[in-house]
Length: 130
Image 1 (tube, rainbow, N blue to C red):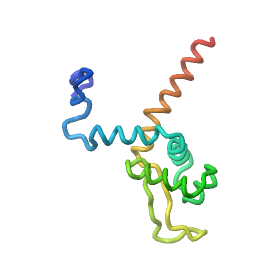
Image 2 (image 1 turned 120 degrees about the horizontal axis):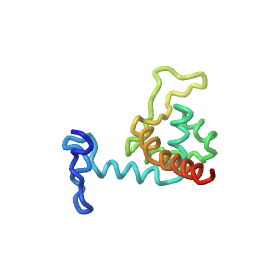
Image 3 (image 1 turned 45 degrees about the vertical axis):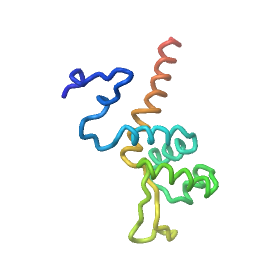
Image 4 (image 1 turned 90 degrees about the vertical axis):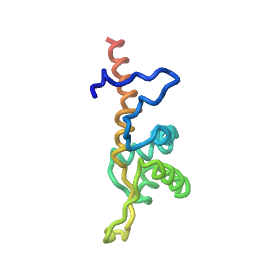
């Protein structure tokens, strides 16, 4: 169905926002949005999308976060599907089996959400500064 053919929901009707057989519910999408509305979780997800998979220890050091704070926020990001905890079959050089990485949903929500708004602001500033 072409974008112009989609039902345009009014303010009270949210039914047409998602395809009939959407993989995720509206609540799940909103949970993801709420998750990155927290600055610490945004920073974690941004770090993982920019720098790739990292162990918890590397994230603690790279983001200068205490372990308990990091794990609290990682758990929230994992719960909504924006980050995944992967296990290695073999330990790396430091003996670490576990690492965290952004999911495709995590990358998408940053790229087509907050970052897009930030780029638009830069574009507007550039347009008005000429």
